[in-house]
Amino acid sequence: MVGVDSILGTGMPGAGKSTVTRLVAERLPRSARLGGDEVNAMIVNGFVWALGEPADEAERQVELLHRNLCALAKNFADAGFTPLIDATIPSRARLEFFRERLGPRLLFVVLAPGIEVCRYRNTIRDPAERFDFDGYERLEADMRREFGDTGWWLDTAGQAADETADRIVEWATRAPRMGA
View 1 (tube, rainbow, N blue to C red):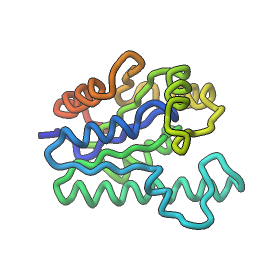
View 2 (cartoon, helix red, strand yellow):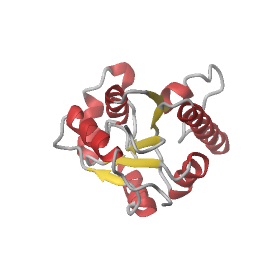
View 3 (cartoon, one colour):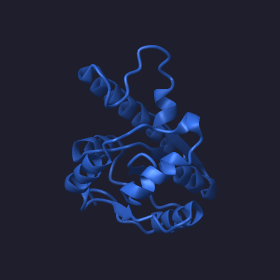
């Protein structure tokens, strides 16, 4: 049995969040995968991506996304499922937003294969799923500065996605909880 209520997987675009959270979910007896991209896709008209313009609307929509992910995660956890949240979390304030809503049994995992690996993985994606992003250096620096001492930073550059998923499942059974 997993020793956490929720697992939040983050990383830069191309880090493997979607793939790994799906594989972890498949390994757990009762689980739900909550993808930030899929929740954002529920907005039919008026969507502004996180770095889009106008900036105030982009920020408002990021907060809406995070509130929706937390609400879904809480509902699934309350029903006995382990939710696996796939979202880019760039700052401690955003991480605290999740922690405040999901509690101390939140397992925070940062997939950190490095910038070049993320860029390469993006190039081999299906063209419809590629993500044009040129802010890797800044995002990596921000993430390390903001919460480099929090959660489990997992260098996945030399690992297959299955191996990464196995490690996360193993760690989830014995992981220290945020705020504990």
